[in-house]
Image (tube, rainbow, N blue to C red; front, side):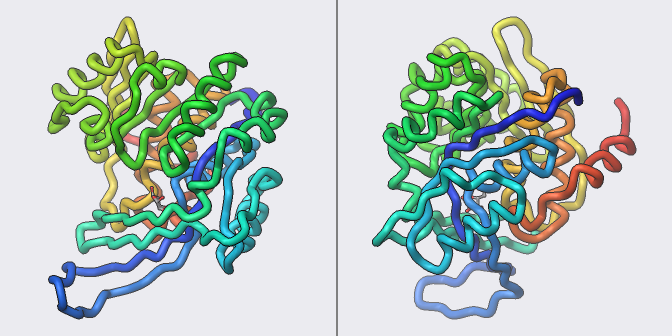
Length: 311
Ligand code: RIB
């Protein structure tokens, strides 16, 4: 990598309450879980921390509540080296929280209560304009109001700033608005929600990506978990293979992918190399518990990257 890029993340910050359980209670039933982890999360915050750990300078634009979690979230950004000058405390609202349930296979189920994330409005984007105009890439997700997402995408396009949209959690969107993004990066289920098409294998993912491109999306990367990622643009489609690990907790892996990809791409890596490195970074995050808490250092990534099996 040649330069230190500046990544601005416009998005959510939550506190994650992760519970490990072998099964889920039936209505009216009480059962014992196997463990608990309290940590900082939120798709936006996770992506910011991943980008920072991968070497980028990172600015976060977000809102938190005036509760116990709000100031702690700001302190966490600062401790992690993320600029939190545009993370604002909103009075009379709770911070975003996410009860997360992880089963014995490491698969997660997440319930998000958006709280103050829902108060991040286009006026906040205007106020953060000097920070955004200085960024090499702006990264967005969908845990803030959709009008703010569309507004920021239009801002980025009007000012020639690369925009990366992770359409998560999945929800139907106006595909014409997504044409303002340079990259749209869903996982399989988010891609299904965007298009109404099933994504059960690589062939489906290719068809779905082509559909999104025909709808005006400029570049699509569909993350496929244990099957790697599919990257599609106007002239070619590439499958980037996975980095195989024995996952214990997959929560936050998608965010690890997005944040690290943004950092690598903005630092000048070739697109397929940035995806391959992000695949490794995301896979390593599944070896630890929690979301941000499981994200590895740049040195740890480089060690695994240099030892990866070559195809
Ligand atoms: O992608 C994982 C994240 O989704 C968690 O950190 C949780 O807060 C939700 O935003």
